[in-house]
Length: 388
Image 1 (cartoon, one colour):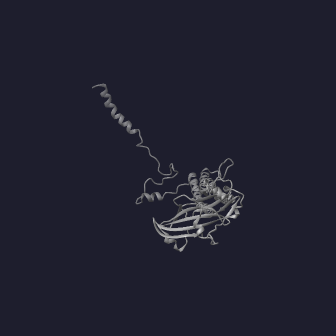
Image 2: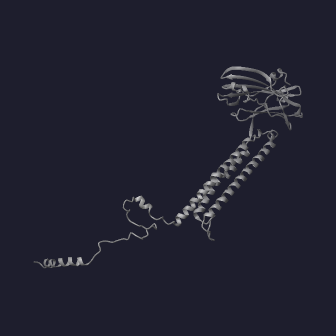
């Protein structure tokens, strides 16, 4: 028998005895009662009691202690609710102020402007343009004042509500309340208010409204007409307006090139209305003197330096007339003849055409008719009706 075998046979029983007497623990034991968890809670029992569900066991645990983070979240949630209530009241007021401003601007008639390089004619209605711009400035300044006051009052109230919820402020604190979480909410609230008030957009809208006007463009002139010298002046026709609005605008100007007083001159107009469906003639109402109170077809006029101006020669379709519905899906072709007189003497005139279109829905539009406006030396239609 070897030495190792002999030693091994003697050491094995001894080792077993020593191991048995050491009293080594079977494993670590951790307490389950009265120990704080990471969340600050205490476990009463690690397992549900008999016949108790897991949900019932969790519900029977004592309430969690309120942490500083939870308190901050409660303050933020309470402030958020109050700010939402303010916005629910203030935003409709802001939208209402913007809507009222838009309505007030839309109700103002656009000032008319003759698009011409003539030094006299381009000053026509300049006072109206100035008065319109003054009114626009007044409207926008008043709207800006009300919006600013509403914005400032709302922000002041929101700040007061936030300070009531905030912890005591220290001398080194910054922001409206000193509470970073509440200050961040106030900053966001202020951004929402500024976006709704939209002062920058208001200024852009004001700039656009100040230049809002109705430009009338020169559609006809007797420049280059041989008879212009005999007339001693020049006829100019200006036309403008929204073609989808159903109401054209027409202005006649007669510029005197000699020493005559423009008040000596007057203008008579004759009109012919023809109603068509497509290219089919439905009715021709014939030539008649313009329907003016005097019954003579003489149009109202005014003078500007050496120019006689007829501010309105355009035809009008009355959309409120009972018979208007009968014009649906029709075209109304209006021919006009303007004659300029110096006393009883005919100086010359112009022929023009405007075409109205009434669609199936009854919406009215217009356009200058085919063919150019032309000089008329004789004005036979006006004279034939006794106009002078």
